[in-house]
Length: 543
Image (cartoon, one colour):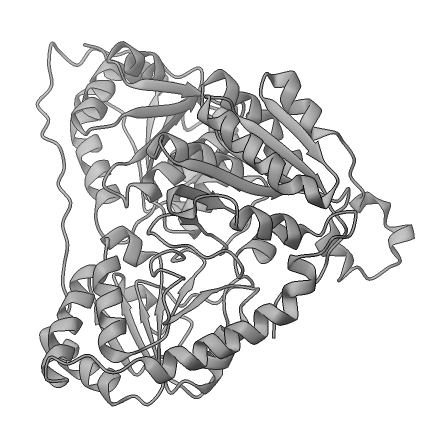
């Protein structure tokens, strides 16, 4: 058995279902021989985004894996790995490396040297006999602790080296740790005594599958709940206690309750300061519950902290809170009424854009019609960078866990396409949608062909305003002098050329019929690109 075959055998034992990659890497061929489905993309970054979504949609129980060739392939993959690192996503990256005789000779690219700052763990294997130990370390790291990408580099001659007839390898296990009981008791007291608490749930609730415990704690305390973009869908946004998600764009009710809160309880979040996250108001008591001690007091000073898995933490808090409240949940009527009032006022303010009959189309009208047409309980949606993120996130109500892939600490254009493709691999029975703009499609649009070739029937919603419109708002010079933001193209025709279903929509009364036709096409196994010609909208819901 050669090194590449040993790696593929280990992937099979670890339950890997898909290996996404860009050739040439002997691991890809070896995986195919072991009935692991191999998916070849047009460029490395999209493949890494697919692996990213696959891990997210499986809450880290199943891991997305990507393999690429040495040299240019490893160089070109850097952005996708950095994105996963910024958003704390557990993926396994298996680059080939230059042969051992020249692997450390400049200017040959070394993944070991260059990926150390954007991975949780980074290792180079120099002997085929060391493959099982390296893979055991990699899977243990990628399954446990703070989620993040893990990389193992294999020089090409190691992949072709003999390791023997068989290997000794036991699959890794996933471990969880819980918080200090004394600290739990103190935090429960703080939450019970708070006059206007707000719960802020992050992506860690998804990874821990702590959705039920989060809802139980919120209902016990009659506490409003908001989420980060990454945590969106961790709490049902149709729930009377939901404030929606918080990012660069936020709802009116979320702004109101954050400003008037006295205690903010962050669970499964890092409280990282970012240009694309909700800003926590000053003067509040901050309770921070996270898996990683490095998050504590990193960006936001906290008065109380808990370290541990989000579900174990929430379940422990539920027990303590029940005891303090005499096993009786608080009446949420007054809080729910206040949330509903502010929500109604906010939606009324935005109604002209959400229901606009103007042409070119309002992107808000397109997204509002999409929201009210699809079966959201059976839909997974993601935004792209810039306008799609800020236009979609505050108005889209997620009802079930893992139905929205949100992101934003680092914002690569074109990320959403790979996420939707990876989501479809993870949940083939669901409608998987990416919403992007004409700037984003310029980065990864060629990989829409991959959806056809690899039979991945997603629905891609393109908001085409022939411009980087969000940039116009902050442009220091007249747009007449700054023509580089103007973009053109007929992307519906591009989709047709690839063999997918493409449709261009320009009239408001055709939005919903087009969406319905698109859904029908995905159900027949066809990838869909719906191109909506929109105005150059620059306003977002911010305060």
